[in-house]
Length: 237
Image (tube, rainbow, N blue to C red; front, side, top):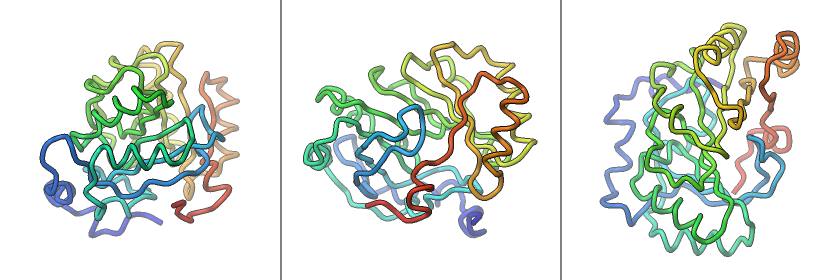
């Protein structure tokens, strides 16, 4: 279902208002922490601890995590780390919302890396990754026209990507597909950066996207949201 109109029409200030409770980088507004199967990226299928932070300054029309736009518990970094340790799983993903809106996210990522976890960061690409620890595997979501937020892409993030990072495109239709192909032609993406094309769950049949990719012999990786195949829209907590 598309986002409700009242959420799409929120002002910039209204969108980030929940984060006003934070001051400094020693606290996080945490929406939920849970363990599940990694549903996307080249790490799909692996058990993973998900740390979902509250707040997002974007409003992609197909967003399936609008519940993370608000609410959440003000939590110390040590409390978050303690919850992660208790899961006894070596892979952790920081996601949102947009996790990089919170100053404490950068310190949390560093601490997770220091403790030896494989750390993934799911980010919209509309916030700079310059201060992200280079041990983190960034999954950068390049917004297409169908998202309604294509104008928010920070192209400078592309030049900051390092080995272990990935690019993801969520495609709504053929126009998005053509746009993404053109975007890739215009940007010099290193071979060590995987590029993933994903069909938007309610608008583009997966088989259609797979056929387009193979017909054009694109050097990209097709993916579907594995967690939705397993559990549908049920929230994993």
